[in-house]
Amino acid sequence: MGEDKKLKILIVDDDETNRFFLKRILSNSSYEIEEACNGKEALEKAESVKPNLILLDLNLPDITGFEVGKQIKTNPNTEFIQILSISSYYTKNEDWVHGIKSGADNYLVKPIDPHVLLAMIEYMLKIQDTENQLRIALKTSETANIEKTQFLASVSHELKTPINVILSALQMSKVITEDVDLPDVKMKLSNYNLMMKNNSYKLIRIINNLIYTSIIDSGFNNMNRINVNIVKIIEDITLSVASFVESKQIKLIFDTDVEEKITACDINKIEVIIFNLLSNAVKFTPAGGTITVNIFDKGDYIIISVKDTGIGILDENKEKIFQRYQQTDDFAHINREGSGIGLSLVKSYVEMHKGKISVESIYGHGSDFIIKLPITLMEEDEENNRVNNYTDYTDRINVEFANIHD
Image (tube, rainbow, N blue to C red):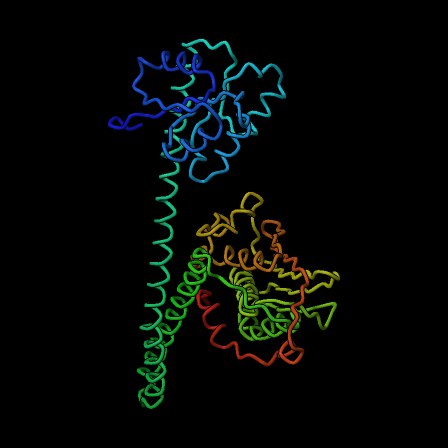
């Protein structure tokens, strides 16, 4: 509590004798005392004086102390004022419950012991001071978090420009390299070109994830939902990565018990979800393993399963993997890179669709990421709803799988 500013106490009682008695008890303390003789005056002074604590008698001539406490606690300008109810009414547990529900932070029963009153006031003001400090700390933290989010978004967008320039330059370099006559030099240049390209894609993946998370943190992550065939979208994404997965000597299987299921979703976010899960599956599945993508129709919802025969996840880490910037010890011995953002992003996007994601895994035998996605429809023009043209995922694959090495 501040040393230079006196703490204010508002005494609310219609009996002048009682107010005099309470002021006398507080006379040797350094509190600044205000008075009110009815509920209306108490509410006005609570708003204008902003006392630190109110000694509130429940038996008031106009409105009850219960109602005064309730109005004070529901007013944003006075909600943090401590209220100490004083009454002879507190004779049963129900009275105490009623008082607490009406906004009282504590209570005393008449007749009042002066020593108890002073101790109670000191105790409640200490609590108030602690709460004020916590509120200030929380506000400071929220402000810092907003600034951090804005900084990440700004830096991420700024980084994309030079990386795109590098990729364009690499395209030109590749064309020039084709004309080199010396085989050894040509091979070295091609390898360097590929190395720079892969690392540029890694940076783009990290930047994209930072942009996605900064948008979520900012609260401006709108859902661009349209009615589409979710089965076709997931199938197209899965088949688009088939060649890459098979090049790692991993078998990829897609299976569904329904060919069409129309639902309203944000296509871009669904793509992020599926690409992240497939990328993770490939990352932690050794050669000779299998990745299976299944879709099960459950009527008012569908189940999307991305299952692998990889290294699996320890039971104690199954929740941790969905937390941002977290990577588990399960993967410590695997030479795989990551920012710890992917699965937290997947979880956020699934929940934006009112869905749920979970994982089933036996350590050493693989993992099964299961999404339960509710079916919803939007009232849109039929022609616009059913548009599901072929999408070229080449660049997306290069980015999403850039952190998977040979």
